[in-house]
Length: 63
Image 1 (cartoon, rainbow, N blue to C red):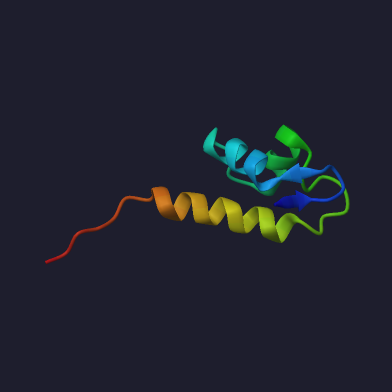
Image 2: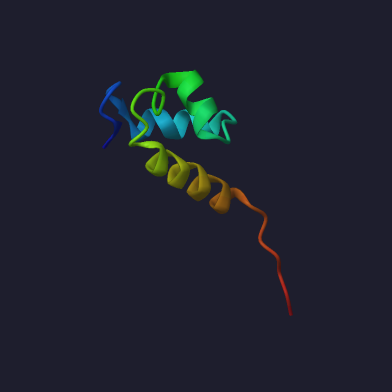
């Protein structure tokens, strides 16, 4: 899926950049260009970042 139409950046590319450690939309823009032009995709980029780090967060076991 295309995330940024301005640069033609796909979700695959954004996910790769996040996996390498990007935590902000600014870092994504610096790494691959997505979110650096008009900004309409920044909400989607932030959602990808949040989903990645939510999945990798340690789970607390209670009981």
